[in-house]
Image 1 (cartoon, rainbow over the protein chains, first blue to last red):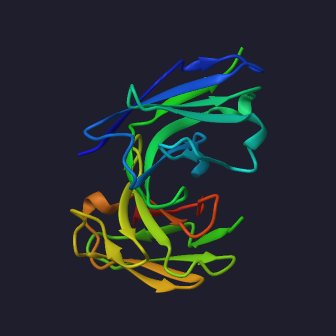
Image 2: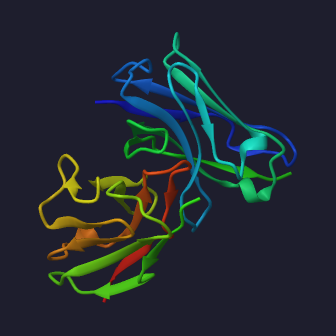
Length: 121
Length: 107
């Protein structure tokens, strides 16, 4: 059973960079069946797909965030990571690591528990 | 970007009643649509994929139907644990997008 665990700072100052690391257990991040995704949910609101990465390093970013997002993969550590630069209060959200099936935007079979990241000075 | 519109925003029902939730896409997504359930403080849970296939471990009271632009999630007889928020997601085009959610609340 694949599992995901998010880690990273819970509080980020405005204009700084949000960093989130997702650790995969129960399987290999080099699996050809999955895309590794970052999805967020502002408090009390809906879900927004930030981006996805394939184990080969191919990336897919939401156009609305593309200029500020970098997602990378470290196969040696079975991890992938999100960086979101120049954050504002609007970036306050629960950030989820997720596993999408077959496509960058595929069905999400697995979700991490989510981590609330607050942007505040 | 494909926009998904869910209706109604809130559904007030009693345990044992039937729930019918709608999701409409701004353009055809074929059958590339999933449904998720989210309870407070929890991550979403996959219920239905490819419009009509139940995910592993999902009870038979949950069913999905539709194709193209119009989709329905039906809960045949509501159990207490089914009162939650439900989201649809299209898997057809990048970026994957979600509906705004339908809250199923106890009447």
